[in-house]
Image (cartoon, rainbow, N blue to C red):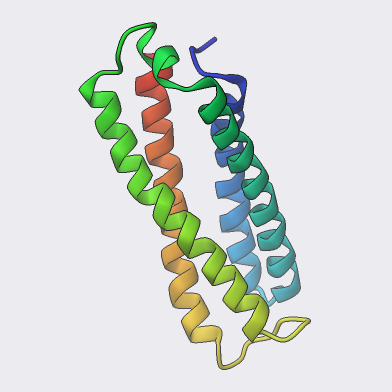
Amino acid sequence: GTRASLMMDAVVVAMAAVLPCMFWSIQQVRRGRFELHRRVQLALAVALLAAVAGFEIDVRVNGWQERAAEGGSPSTVVWTALGVHLVFAISTAILWPVVILRAVRRFPNPPVPGEHSASHRRWARIAAWDMTATAVTGWIFYWLAYVE
């Protein structure tokens, strides 16, 4: 029921599922379920990579501006919301894979706490909040561009 494309809608819904899964996975670490945390994080990374790839293809092929502006030009508020969202989306796209790759390389398999734990905890916390900010600012952009 919005002006957004199906892929845009899918990413909005995907982020609504990813955030609770991500925070649930973090809770599993606190309970000592390191392997479960690892598996969930890797699955989320693959799912998000697929969703973002599909989204980027959709935006490049079908655009977004015409739908957002109902045939005109998007408002300054929409452009501002997009700019703020992109700050978080780009930093998340860099930070989350780095955190995951470092964890895969520096933790044993199966994972257990070790020398890398303190660094991982610090950077993973930053990445989790960055992912949260990406989702929230994305939802704000979506609302302003396609619903309002």
